[in-house]
Amino acid sequence: MSTAPNRRAVAVVLLIPLVVTLALWAFAWPAARIAPLDLPVGVAGAAPAADQLGRQFEQREGAFEVHRFDDEAAAREAIEDRVVYGAVVAGPEGPHVLTATAASPVVAQLLREAVTTAAPEGARVQVTDVVAAPPGDPRGSALGASVLPLALAGMGAGATVTLLGLRGIRAALTLAGSAALVGLAATGVAHSWLGAITGDWWTEAGVLALTVLAIGAAVAGLASLLGPRGLGVAALLMILLGNSFSGVTSAPQLLPEPVGALGQWLPPGAGGSLLRSVAFFDGSAAGGPVLTLALWSALGLAAVLVAGRRGTSGTSGGPAEAAPVAREKTLAAPAGDQAPGAP
Image (tube, rainbow, N blue to C red; front, side, top):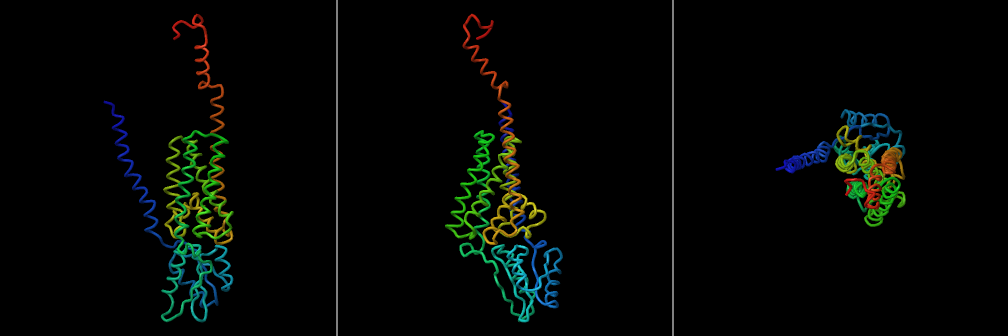
């Protein structure tokens, strides 16, 4: 009896627990270790009081990256430009906390609690949400939940193109077309129906489409370079690591090192950051995520196109094409003309 089926069964039995363990590590470990790491915050106001606030942040070594501003107006502008997540303004009546729940509800709550705890007993702490999350998604839950469907859409597009055997220009156009349709549909749900994002409709659709294209092109490109194993590598990068390391539900600076930085170099994390920028901050700090998504899209599509050209040149006049032609000639020849021993 062949042992091959038994070996495959054992491989499946061992592989499933390994995948589950890896998934638990990727999702549970960052969530269990959420803490600020060089989190950009601002301090503004008169020198003595503002300096004291800055020292309070700096006491937690490595937790905060403190930016100093002259006044509240400068601090507000920095929040709107996504330079800092929030700021504390020292005033005669007590500290004034400026937050941006649109950037991260988790960071806004963390900053508010940190200042309230450190304030002198009886001091009044005023809180202002400079860039508030939309009423349709006050806790940012819908935006955070959008990363996985986008990753699955890109994974599905790339895998389908690969399994259908599409090559070259046809594969590239299929990936681009499916990404565009997903962008339109997702914006219709998130913007028009749920009200979870509130920026320019067509810009948001373009961001969502670019995110799906970057993921789908990467999947198809890896499959064209590595074969079926490329789909597994792509699933690991885009679904498992890309989704769990994206930082969309909290903030990249709240994830343990180097998870936060790594997540921003993968399309799901870059797409989530870019969507926040165009949906709530008029495109501020969008350059890095755009570059990341463009690179993944360009490299993936280039791999697909190169593989398509190789496939075309490999079949033109090669052995795979010559064998059927020779067979047809043999069958068409008269019986007497066939070589001895020919069927």
